Image 1 (cartoon, one colour):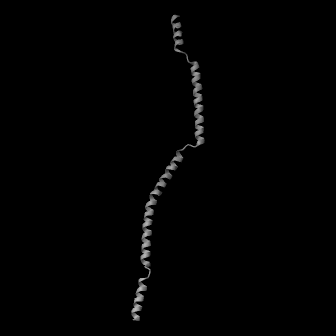
Image 2 (cartoon, one colour; image 1 turned 90 degrees about the horizontal axis):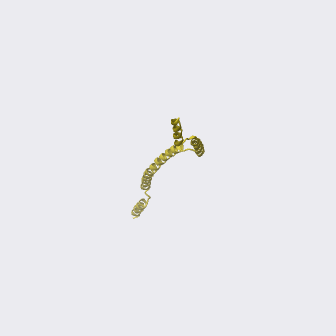
Image 3 (tube, rainbow, N blue to C red; image 1 turned 30 degrees about the vertical axis):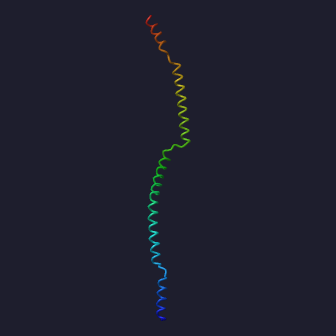
Length: 110
């Protein structure tokens, strides 16, 4: 009888042991699945950030600094003022057609 109780007791103790091998394997599989999902989520973001960085570099290269832009506008305004002054001078030298016709008539009458 004692041997039967001892055998039963040994079976209960053996059946009550924690299944560490199953737990470790399950945790490993879960970590692998989460790692794969994380990688799938991270790669498009990483590629997008790389594209964004290169586009930002191109934009910075193409952008004109504020000081340079102000200098361009100042130069353009000077050019416009010079053209307006040239137009005013040309307008004062302009001789109307009627004056030429009168001159030609005088020449014909001579």
